[in-house]
Image (cartoon, rainbow, N blue to C red; front, side):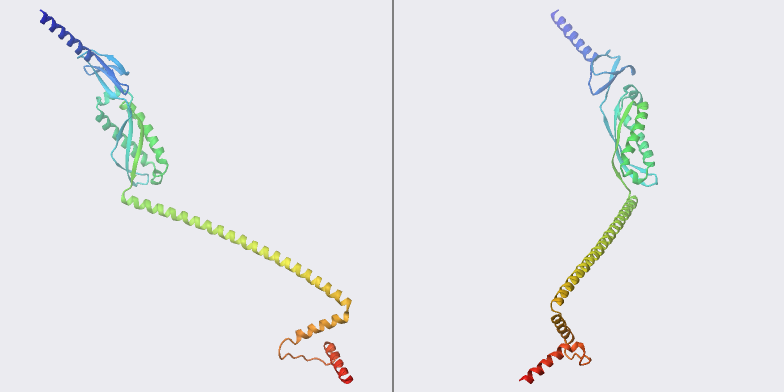
Amino acid sequence: MINNRSLLIVAGLGALAWLGSNSLYIVDETERALKLRFGAIVEEDIQPGLHFKIPITQTVRKFDSRVLTLDTDPSRYLTLEQKAVIVDSYVKWQIVDPTRYYEATSGDEMAALGLIQPRVDESLRNEFGRLDLQEIISEKRDDLMTSSAEELDELMRNELGVAIRDIRVKQIDLPDDVSSAVYERMRSERQREAREWRAQGSEEAERIRANADRRREVLLAQAEERAETLRGEGDAEAAGIYAGAYQQDPEFFSFYRSLNAYLDSFDGEGDMMVLEPDSDFFRYLNQFESLEETGNGGE
């Protein structure tokens, strides 16, 4: 009797343990859950915490509610001018409607990724087709990704119950033929800019040179004017000095000027002048000869 009672107690405890483990379940804060009865949904969007279910007839499906990453395969897209680019991108997505997500994918994440990637590829293909290559490699690429994520987010919420949080391009490569064209275009653009800068530099240099020449002419003219003024003032002062000296002793002044005239006239060898002997130019020479004759006669 004791053994039978012990077995019954153990069996009862086991049954309670089994019933507890199959009746109680925990939803983590990073999860979203659904309660199913034979595959049909009986409770949606179960919040985190401890919950109860009927064993055997009811099951619980849990889904990761964190932001997940889909690393897409590199794809070849055509730009507005029909130039090919190789785009490597990734998508940030999150389950926001567990019921719709379960109905569309049966809770299979790989099936969800298989539905998301073609939509992303189509959206990016359309966006790249609206822009030319110059716009794609410029700052407009961020606007392109934002627009594509917003359009795809609304579509995926309705179809799969997932939100597209972000789409980002990791890398854009160009085929060899397109790369050559792009590099040539960049080279031509830089050469054009260089020519513009050189032209502006030459224009500025000519302007500076013209201003310098004009300033030089102004300074030379001012200096010449100043020199002429000083020269005139000097000549006037010299004339005044000469006049004052002449008034003090006119005869000596005439003699002094005659001596200077003699020195200027007979400066070189072989100088010859044709003048009358009694001309006024030789007045002081004639006086000197007369004095010599008078002095000799006295001796």
